[in-house]
Image (tube, rainbow, N blue to C red; front, side):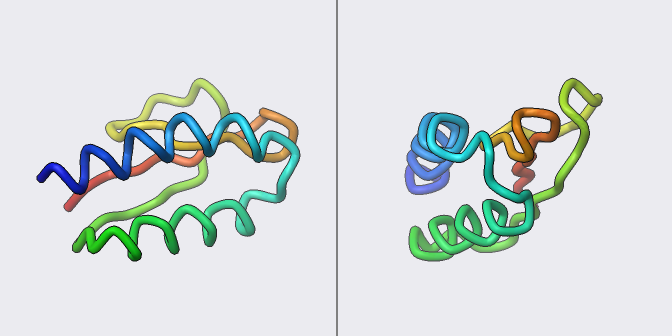
Length: 74
């Protein structure tokens, strides 16, 4: 559980800051690699429009800040 919280926390800080202009699929792949490296099982990443209602945690933004990547465990 601690690994999940640490991974999500780091990704939420780093993902938004360094990747605002990246294509969504590229950023999504990078985030997935970091989560996998932390050993987190069973999660999903979804690209949504900025501000769209979602039941996960925003861990990055892409395409100039117009879309967000949402992390959901399970």
